[in-house]
Structure formats: C-alpha cells, structure tokens
Length: 95
Image 1 (tube, one colour):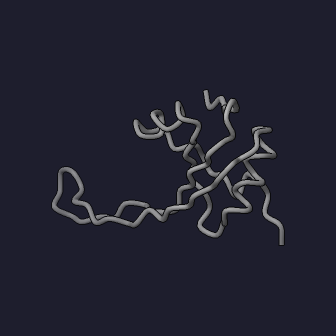
Image 2 (image 1 turned 30 degrees about the vertical axis):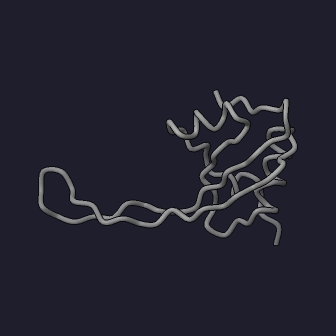
C-alpha cells in the first residue's frame, strides 16, 4: 500500500544543528516510524520539487525524564528523523 507524502514527512525539525546544516544543503525532518529512505526521497521530491542526493535515517530513542513540579517520571516521545542532502545549488524554503 502506497503511503501519502503527508504521512511520510511529519514536520521539519527546527533546531540549531538543523539551521547550520541547511546552510550546507542538508535538511532535517521528523518522519513516520514506518517510512524508509526511498519513500522519504520521493516525498521530498514531490513536495518541494528538489532532487535529494542522499537520505540518512536516524532513530531518536525515548528518554526517561522527571516532570517539573512533582517527582514523577515521564518519557519523551522518541521517533525517527531523516537528514536529506540536496544537490549543489538547490534549497528548500521552510519558512
């Protein structure tokens, strides 16, 4: 079953490291747990009309954290993120 592009790319991951990498032609996205490199590359190409040179996927582990105000333990979300490297001269406007 083919997944829709909105189900593959969840959101851009806006961080300090991501801003630095975007100047070098690499962009970071939060992606679906079941998405793979080929689906991410196709989704980026369809949505942003650019050609990805390389896609790297990284799992973000869940972490145990203490909540503020009380001494209860909680968990962060975790998930998957994708680094999308574009060809020279291409860029994505995330604003």
